[in-house]
Image (spheres, rainbow, N blue to C red):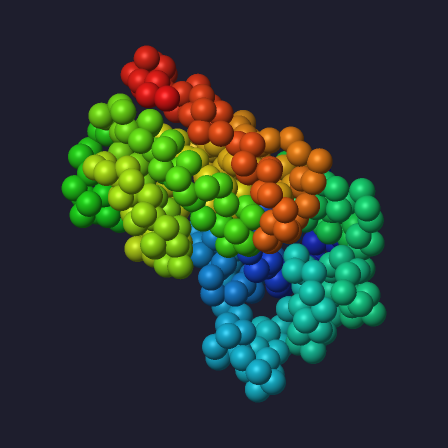
Length: 362
């Protein structure tokens, strides 16, 4: 039975069909999952659907709090004025009574308005206040919150009860089977320990720790012969993965561009540990509660940190960080200060019950 603290907030009977507009980055999408769970708990009988760009929609696959995922393909069939008009007709025909806009852009509110959704909830950003029926002021204090709390503040500002910031990620049994098939294709024996490494980042080069340091770190990890390393990344990072694997030699597998997001999620779930830059896969690993080392440089280690008790941030304190820049205009000192010794020491603490099993080859 639904807790009384959630039931009937904001007159549950008036919120029968809810459209959630997703954010467009994978990491941010993961950080909206606590708010999605709260919407379901507040409105247990509602038909709740989520509209998302194709590349981020897979974050929400198998999420039991959603009734349907709607693909908003702004680069394909919904491209241009005619495509936008088609999307507006689609959501209008679905008859939503409420839109919760996690995406802060003007377009998100404009499409919900044109889609005849009578209640429109979101932050009053990007000049869209007049399009919202429940505009939530984006205050400086909210901007400084961790992003999971940031998205919950949209609900709170609209009078919807909120809950915990625990992240959600759901994997189906058949996806677990598929992960085992991929590992078998690479002739990775059963029973070995898998360490995932994500050396890329979508936002920009400033977020990326250096490839040669990743290679050095992996060589130290592979001193333990029971370990295999999986390199994760997009198709655009395939060459990066190949170079790192070439430096590391055997027992290092390049998966960059070789899996879809759901396969990557299932393979991360198989890992004993994960080492990454600040990225979408960092937040996925955090949601799966995988022992995690996150290397931070120019991004904010408070607002976008991995929200898991199994996570450890490694960073070098510099005067210019966090600058939030895509490319470093200076000497990249925030990343230069993160040494292989620092990351390897954390790996020994978090990934291995017997630290003597990993030789210190530094």
